[in-house]
Length: 178
Image (tube, rainbow, N blue to C red; front, side):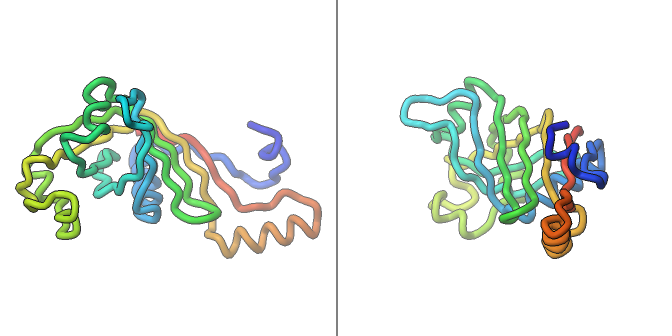
């Protein structure tokens, strides 16, 4: 553990496995609504990182996105499926980084399940637009930073810590393993 954690008198590290890990991922992804989606390989004209909205986290912890099959992202995934997703659910908590393996497909049933009318902005032919792909990211590892009791309690603890010269920030962090 790093030095700031050594100063913390409270339990502030908890690795999460299985169902608890999936629930933490769902909680943070729901709060964040979007992430930075980074591919491991970039094609010309791409930075390899772009904002994306996760449409779903399933019960196995897989994340689902809609994409365009002619995008840099889909091309990059075809070359190297390793991706990293960065989520920030609020200004001071609900942080998550996930590394995983992405697959892009034309699963029409999944596209229909994830479809929202606003997507017609990008897919002008609607949910049957031939350019739509669905990306599944299966996490292989991750790490989260959060608060144990929410921002209000964390704020009060930080004030008390500042007044007493103690590290009291109500933080919790750890690995997420599926």
